[in-house]
Image (cartoon, rainbow, N blue to C red):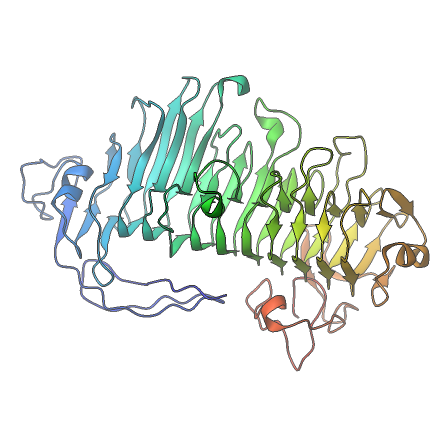
Length: 506
């Protein structure tokens, strides 16, 4: 898949192109017509020049026309920022922190009623927000929904870049609707939200309760979430979702056609909040379709990456999870399927290829079981699990398929290694012998068991493979579209029609 993501330089009429792995980025002409400056020492009746800045961010935005830029000087701004005007394809409206200065949009003391955000981008197009601290928006009122940044109502061509979002907190008990988001992108109209780019942001220490830190939900058709860092979270890190009443039209009620790449997520731990347990997920595809999850690092999370469905009518379909490092998670590394004894949506036509999983499953699962480095639950159909390095702990399970539901899943060309006893579980039956396992799952004929993959360093850990690793050039090339063009580091994935197992191409 390819997504066209614009690139620009602000305040001057110079053309600059931004490039990214696996994303086609054209170079539009973007002309800055006027620049308004904002400062805590400014005055809202000033001209808005750098020598006579305005005081309010919203005041400056109210003056903009397509092509204008608002630059915010360092300091703290206690206001809820809202965009009321759209830019155009060649004339974006840009809101940007002054280079080298900390511009802080601070919610301390600001009220919240219903669903609100510190920065709201609603029913507008061609908007960029860059370089702010967006923080300290908190509420102890039941059943509100508190957000750092909210994008909705058919907004498109939106870029959210290099912001720090933290201390967004709904501090109530779970039974009082504890909910919020660091960044929420929600398609809640019949207009598809397209060309959404969220990159190089940092989201941390948010109390989101039953919600997530970075959410894409509803009629969002074409998005890229890349290069973000999310940590110290009490629930899900990144969620591309469907089936959660975001959109009243069922055909529009799921996210689609997106890329989630090059992000790092850690300390994603539900036990740190009032929900308790270890149900939080680093990257979660739940009822969405046509999503690529690649080159991410997920570690010290409750669970690593999920392509799952919690809703009967919204299976997760046609997704690819590839070239990721997933390690030191409390429970499973990568998992598929509907929730056990709860939903029938399932996971269909997905690929889990060229990932490196290491020492997940630190604790037993919700049923007292070893969950497995790769987990398959209800209604997994026509999925492919290949070219993965699965390095299990001493008391771990490589692959765990719980029930007899689902069919036509292909498992092969993986590399299994453990310091303990080998274990696989298929349809609820445990297998310790590799040949018996192959018969049970009707696959894995070309996989490797019991040979050390020679990771670069298991102490740190560093999950790259050494040049003499048995994983090198021992995988199977499915296609460039499936395996991807770049490994975890951006190096060429397939060379001379050869591919290594795991996320690394040494």
